[in-house]
Length: 128
Length: 128
Image 1 (cartoon, chains in turn purple, orange):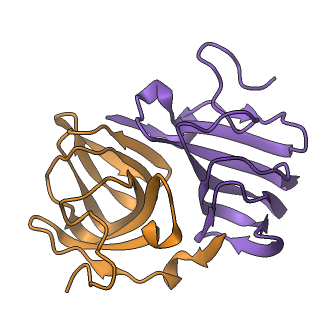
Image 2 (tube, each protein chain N blue to C red):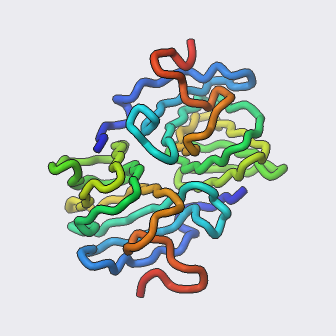
């Protein structure tokens, strides 16, 4: 078992092109022996946003705090705490925080790779 | 994309032997075409608890509300909102709420089956 509070997990800035005011904590990852999927907590500063992009893997998202806008399936929608968002593989998407910022869980399969959302390699920093 | 608030998703009582005061909402499941894992929200009444059991799949848990006790890896520990718990496959475990109840996300791989935690079959009620 792993049992920690999220704030015990290191928070790293996301420096992927198109990201602004975004940081991530890898709450459950390959370091923990998770066999199928990983849990990350994203924190967006007021007005912060993730890149507008798509990839081969899905996102399973639960909004923890704040408000903002999600773009997916070709349209924007407002989100608030308690919202659940499933972004299927290959669907273009982004998340943008409102004036108070936002925090959400975003889970991905272990095969996710190739962008700033990807798991940092062992022993290397994910972002400056 | 699927985008709903959690309270729009039907809440079903968990009637598995050993469960008491437990209900579940399948927030993201096979109905949504999730390819690798499913997101559930469990709600425990004050003093409620899940069964003490083990199974072949892992749990990735994020405590949303309340306090309580988790048993895993042969010992008990107190949990509170913001806690992250990874229960590896085959590890005996249970979750018990304190006097104010508790709510948490618990994600499982799509292959999870065989107990009250499993996905209800299409067109059938999961619980009475």
